[in-house]
Length: 353
Image (cartoon, rainbow, N blue to C red):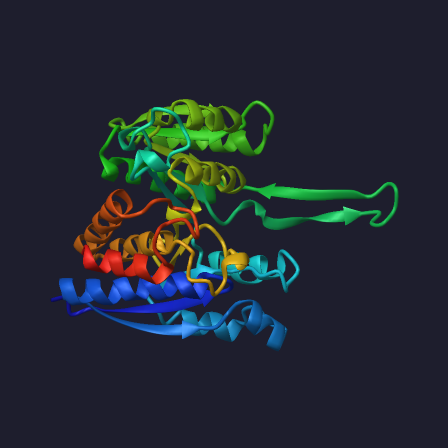
């Protein structure tokens, strides 16, 4: 039994977030009992309701409170009652930047070919990981309006990239490729033929770091070609490293070919600090309170969180239980079509641990 007590901050968030987090915490309790590890959770009510009541998203005091924890488990952020961008920038991006979660890690893994929209693709064909730079690029929020509200208005959005930020992301990707130990192939995904400043820096940095990893094969693909090959030949990929914007786009395509948002989980990782794990499908407000949303993405995010905390056997067993439930019990991965309710799917995972 580990002496360590894992301190977990829980932000259930908006929409169906609290429902899927509840199932994740159910699985966490069962896994802790089975694998003899200890944890403590504290719930934080950040999200739409908190914002509408207080006018605040995240304060400096809120961030200081979260610094007391080892990790963050997030449900979803976003609601129709709040103008788009306020919660996303004020909570999601603020957390990523405040805790320097410079890696967004997105495993793309097909568990059952019945749920893949691609013809003749099996689980062995769709098993890759996207490493997305998570704190720079276009999401830095730099830019300006010129001549606003006039016919000659100009909007400038800056993609801000530093050698330090790019290099630490690329180095993480090389280390991850080595640790993953599958094809040992790392693809740089970018747009070197058009974005000639940012992607010249990305390419040069990638080539420099590659010299330190002679055991890793490397290649390059434009982002548009990457999207084509995800659909045509997903089996070509092992690990992909890319910038913030392109990573955001290609991981949603990755989610679709692995079976949909109901199974897609991700981590916002600071390898030296506090990381945050979440289902990537969003708050799905139209399903709120109906007990029909798929909680498996949140449960897979929980498994990623436990692996990050060093509970590797628990993480592996949770993923195996999810695969068993997907293959043997579910009719669909879509909300309302699974053949089971949200809470029943959580129970099935617990039963299969």
